[in-house]
Structures are given as structure tokens and as C-alpha cells.
Amino acid sequence: MLRAITHRVITAPALAAVFASSLVGGLVVPTQASASNNSLTTPITGASLDAMWPIAVEVEIVRVDGDGETVPRTRSRAVLRRQRSIVPDGHELQLHSAVRTDRGRREFALSVTAHQHPGDAVELEWSLQVRDAEYRKLDAPSYLLHRLQLSNVLELAEPTLKIARADIVSVRREGHTQRLEIDGELHEIRIFARSMRG
Image (cartoon, rainbow, N blue to C red; front, side, top):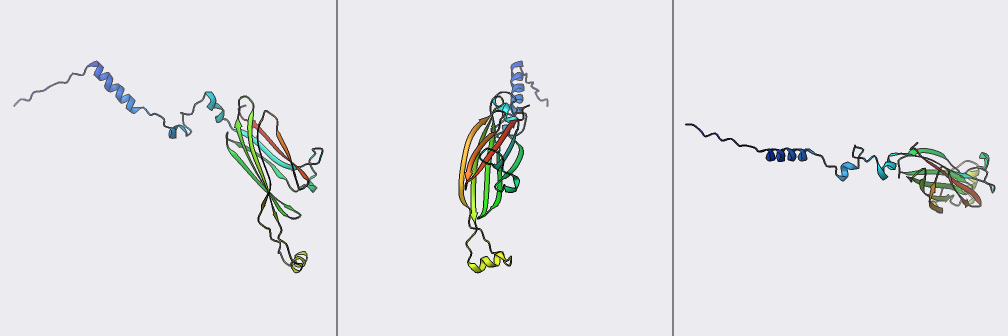
């Protein structure tokens, strides 16, 4: 028995439609999840260009006298040492320091976030919290043992908030300084930021 053999003729428009559908099916359309990673979908022009460049940030807190001069190191205790970092745009840099005082311990917590602005400008968003933890009161026998170095009985109370400051400023090749007074001592926050765009 002979079977009838039929041939399907594919016209040019139908072939073009099949070819186009296979191309479209093979295309990868970036979703929000895939566009957020470090792939070639990251735009290289426009407003998003600034976000590709890191920012060099330098931060310190020093004690100063009335004329703005840094207090000699032998007299300086409440100081957050200079820290240098290179961070991405919008990254929050958190710095902590604890120093001894006559009444206990003082803790500094400084947060700095730098953002690219047009040209050479950098926006700085910073906040500072200073907390004091004082020694607990001692009775006479405990104090005597402590002075004779026969017992380590000095205990710190829970830290309490002493000062809180925050600001948003824009700098262009110059540093930002902010002064504040803590227990009669003048301190200065110094923040420098520079875009690494070259």
C-alpha cells in the first residue's frame, strides 16, 4: 500500500514569523533583580554614571583650644583618631571611639554618608552621638582598697546620651568642620571627602 506523501510549503512570511519568535524567545530581558547586579546592564551614561565612582573620606575628632589650634597630645584624651576610607557612593561609614575621663568613660559614635553631586561637589550626611558612662559610687572601704590597688572595684554605670548632633552639607574640595563643647572642652569634627572620578 502506498501512503500519500504530503508536503507543507512554508511561505516566506511564515518563515520570518518563526524566526522572529525564536529570536524574541532567546532574548534576555533584564528584570529589576538582574539589573541591580554588576553586569553589563549597568548604564554608563546619564545620572547613574556618578554612582560608579567611589569617594575618599577622611574623618577625625580633636580637642582644640579657643584659637582653633589642636590641643597638645599629652593633654588630649577625647579624640577620635583620623580614619581614611574609600567607600561607594551612599555607603554609611561608622566610626567608634572610647576614651577615659576623670569620671568614667566617654564613647563617640560618628556616622558619615557621602553622595556624589554634579561637578566636584560631595554631599556629606553625618551624625554624632556622645555617651558618658560614669563610675559607680564607692563606699570608703572599697575606695581605700582601690587606691591601694588591692581590688579592682571600679564599675561603670550604663552609658547615657551626652550630646547628639547631625547635619547635611555639601563640600567642594574643602573640608567640613563642626565645633561642639563637651563639659567645657571644645571639640572639632573634621570631615574631608573627594570624588575619585579623577
